[in-house]
Image (cartoon, rainbow, N blue to C red):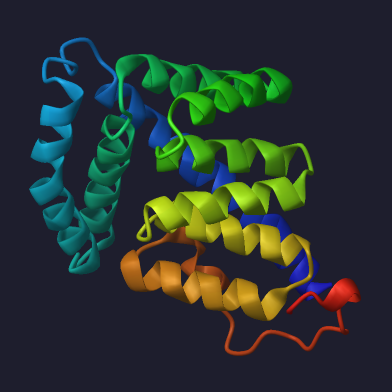
Length: 208
């Protein structure tokens, strides 16, 4: 029971973290932020990306960590290959916030088709699929997001939530530790436990 309660808190915190990120993403999408051509914008972001993740890892206080986190969310949104793809993701987030999960999913399907190398589109679709209880699909999406952006701490914490839902506690804990190594002030860090419980053998040879 203790771990089922922990799962509920995981999901709640994930929703809060993503909701807190919406203003940062909206700032990134404000008029005037599309002045650079996509290729020029991508080149400009590369040195900034390294600085942002260094600031996140070396943050001395929660406030510093949150400031770096918000800047990274803006960076992830600006990594969209074009304004049209970014708008698809933004509208999908709005639809999700209104509990229109099917509408959000449709928009994100279009976003990943248009931009198969855009990590944030996969991360957001993974969250929507989780809310739709499509856990295998959600896991596939966050796996793709992490493959595209190996430091995507939000996708990592989302992956941990999915693994928890599947009863794969040890893998979930390992994933959380990886995320916290990148973002020491990640909200979900409070859910790390010294040792996850033993779980029965999974059907079909699933690795717990």
